[in-house]
Image (cartoon, rainbow, N blue to C red; front, side, top):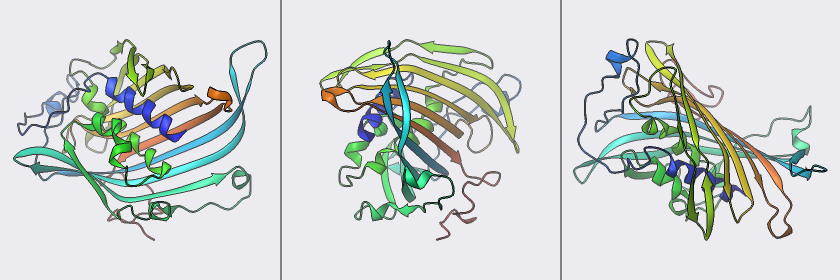
Length: 319
């Protein structure tokens, strides 16, 4: 199930506008986001510089439910909760020089998970603690790193199973939206202004011997917010009607996110939330289940700290 969801999300990202911006380049261009942040707000691509780094807190919750077929119709109705899977990670993106060309290095500084049964989710039950990912994947490095071309997040998402091939644990697949969300600003046309809506048509692609339909995307530049001294563009994105033709997986995805318009992180994700509803199964008589995923990725800085009950001011785990 988790693998199917990862493929759905990865393919959707690969088909999104701007997904071909995966060639690393050493050239940078001055950002005009600061000047246009309030007078004529548009998102401009971040001007990456060797040596800079940005740390994010990521969390993903996937709740899976049983379903039943509604009478006199094709609608699948969600019934009982089965399991909940939580994954969180402190993630650092750094810009490095690789053979004379700028590239990105992503590091998973601390990755943890917890699985919650239906019984453990009943009222009055104690909290289930998070465990280090090494308890499920013993050979997973304490700090995992991977280097890839600038703006190559879509390729990383699409190939995440290959990147993690030596660590066959399903919890790691939930990390895919680190790249889906972090790479979102790269797909925003620089011509889109406040209040404007852009839509792209759906597309069918061949994948794993069947047809995958990536639904059309609707993107709304809703408004400009301010946090501290940073102006942030706020976007809403919807993609309803994604499906694998031969695997019995249908998903609807929507997300909201802020993109910094000025400051050191200009043009980068300041924070984003993604929600996906997936219906899977039914092929070969397998029961159909529903999974609701809620994901967030938040830039850590002086104004924002996530999970302060678990991480200290240095962003290292308390225990």
